[in-house]
Length: 134
Image (cartoon, rainbow, N blue to C red; front, side, top):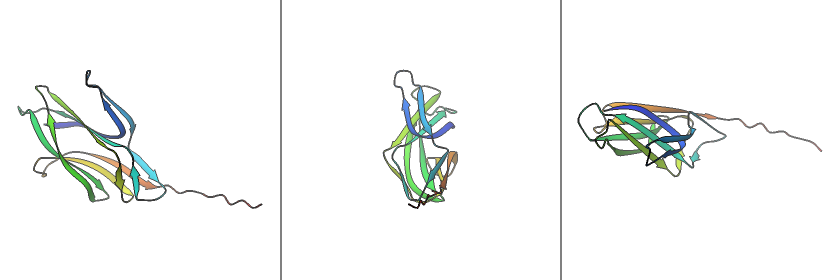
């Protein structure tokens, strides 16, 4: 199995009938005035292609914030007699403790082989204050 696409966004909708996936507000960089922050909506999209005759492939995915694993779970990618498998993982609130980088990594079931990763740059945004005199 090979992961063709790994994407993170605010919202991802997968149409059940057509199988099409719509991605809204792609995460590539997040700026905040201070950390920690809460991402109210955080979605992960995985598109995999079958390379061997295994119908269900177990993977481990990790969400890493500047080197620290903040979430880890396993997922089954089910090919259902097709060449591709699609999976959407949705979080209703993801706490990000510090700036630097947020990264999603997908590994084989044993956790030894990295299959794909998606980095998101995290940075501090400075807020300028205007002081007016009356």
